[in-house]
Image (tube, rainbow, N blue to C red; front, side, top):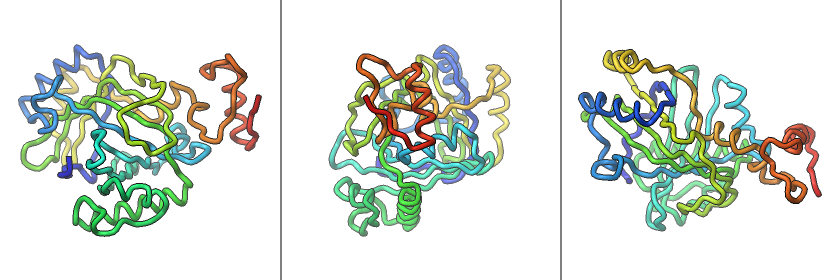
Length: 280
C-alpha cells in the first residue's frame, strides 16, 4: 500500500451504527462509489489498519480531544501489515473548526527509529519523492518534540472503503472491530497485548468529502435516519479502557485491584495533575 490516495483536506461526518444498517448502507453506496482496491475480493470487503498513536506523558493530546479543543491534532504511525519491508506512514490529523487536514509521509522501516529520535529521513529512506511527504514528516517531528510525545496506544480495525472512481473527492468508510491496547514501544506487529473493543459490534461510518457536500449524502442520511455524532477511536478507546493504562510513567495499583472504574483510577487522574506518582 504505497500509493497515497489520502484526502489532504476534507470534511467528515461520523455515525456509529449497527451492522445490519451498515450492510444496507453498503448497498446504497455502491450505486455511487466503487470499493477500494485493497478491500476488493477480501472478506467483508475490508482490510486491516494499524495505528500507533503518540502522546505526552500526561496524555495532553488525548485531553485536547476530551476537552474539545478547537484546533486539535493527533500524531500517529500507520501500517498495514506485519512485514519488515512494508513502509510506516507518519501522519498528522488536525481538526480546524469543521475541517479535517491531514499530512502524511511514508518512511522505510529501518529509518523509523531515527525519525522518532528527532532526525529527518534521507532521500533513500522515503517511500516517495513527493516533497510534501518530507514536509509532513518534518512537521510531525516538530510537534512530537514540542509535545514530548512517544508511543502510547495501538489501535487496530477492519476498514471497508468506498471511493469516487475519478478523483477520490468523495469517500465512505465503515470501520469494524476497533480494538485498542497500550503500546509504549515501536514493535509494528499485529499483536495487541490485552486489547479492548472500543465500539463493540457497532460500525463507525464516516462520510468524507473534499468539495461540495454531495446531494446523495443528504439522501443517504434521510433514508437511513442517521444521527451524526462523535467517534474518536483514540479518545474513546482510552476513556473506555481506562486512562491509567496509558500513562507510561504511571503508577502501580495494589495487587489484585483492577484500574477500571475503581477509586484508584480517580486518584490517578488527580495525581496526574499534581505530578504525584502512586506506588504500592
